[in-house]
Image 1 (cartoon, rainbow, N blue to C red):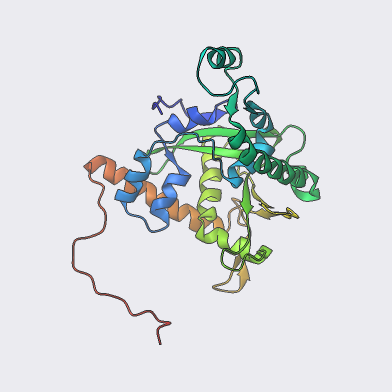
Image 2 (cartoon, rainbow, N blue to C red; image 1 turned 180 degrees about the vertical axis):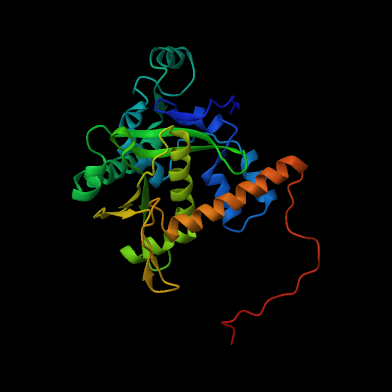
Length: 305
């Protein structure tokens, strides 16, 4: 992937995923490495990784594509029967005639088609859901890119918003979830919502809401919603307000504050701001430290017998 010069701060509605990834700016997905316990060295390594598209898209990515960019599913087709392999004059002619299409071998197509069908079923379930369906109504835009400069550190950031309500009335992100890994039994809503904390969703909600507020000259607070969709049948769907959270530490629901933020936002904001400060200091010093070099002690777990 070639790194491209990032555009000026603002909101962009027609940017491809590859172009967005090429902007050399700080994203929330990379920032989570620092927020969730990683070192500056971990962050630096994640930034250096090259993002390349693969035919083996995971189920979650396919679900996003089916809901937010459905036409992209149509760009993958099986090789015509008269072309036996992806080489030779006939293959080159086919590519020249349909440069937008990714052609798959029969074996690749056999593996791909069921995944595509499952993704389409998931997207249909989201659209049919009475609550989630409203968020994907008239005037919605998908895969909206934002660029802004953090006012506290001067670090330039970027974000890729899954869905953007009419006139920016709200924003949100589609999250897919599966079964428990060990027992292969369905997750409850509570378990999915609780996992959001460990996956850094409070960081994403705060950073995107702040980022859009900074990128948009109007600077108004924007509600943030998570739409959760089950990967397997029956493809249950539910919506969570990224501002509201039950704090198990105190047993209370967080109250909305004047700027429409809650403890969920505040903690997420504190985490990503601290990470941006770390990045700013590392960029100035040119050093990206990992773990310390002192000799550590082993640990006897609290649950040990």
